[in-house]
Image (spheres, one colour):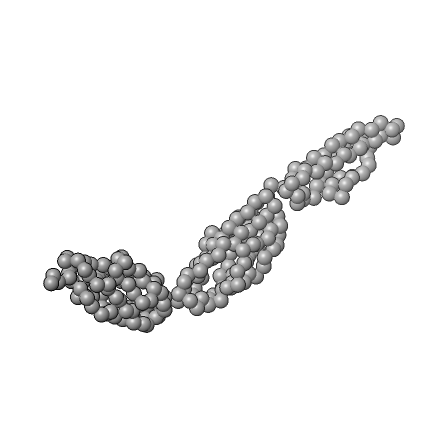
Length: 232
């Protein structure tokens, strides 16, 4: 017999029932076979072939997503498997209690505090032999705020720059809807003064544009109007 197959008895006489016991086949890729030879006292042989199928792999996770606190915390998920597995996808802002194992196992995810306003996420992939499963980790960024005043500016046909005052803690970016309306800063963080400049309006009709300040919490639209040129 092989090391994975045993018989209830090795010898006997007359009619008897022989019980064969096979250990677990942990391979998910290979069936295994063995041949048992029954031989009588007069030398007559009767071979019996025993076949054991490969393991049908099972792999899943208890949840598909973990939402983690901004301040950092520990949460768990469970790998549910009947084979060996490994976890890929680690990043510096979190740690895992284990990245490899076999069978069912609880995995603890411990995150560092998120000290910036941007949310962050990572995808962990648990690989078996022929199967895989994923879980997404998400951690929100810190709370930020921003205000902008004024949200309406009027310019003469020929005018000096005017200021929009930003107050708060958020990152922000600025765009203008017109080439003739420009700002002295396109991006920044927190409190600051933004100088808005309008090129001279040489036309005899007034014109308008929008300066948009975008931040994590939304956007502010500052409406610009510029007077028409005066005829000589």
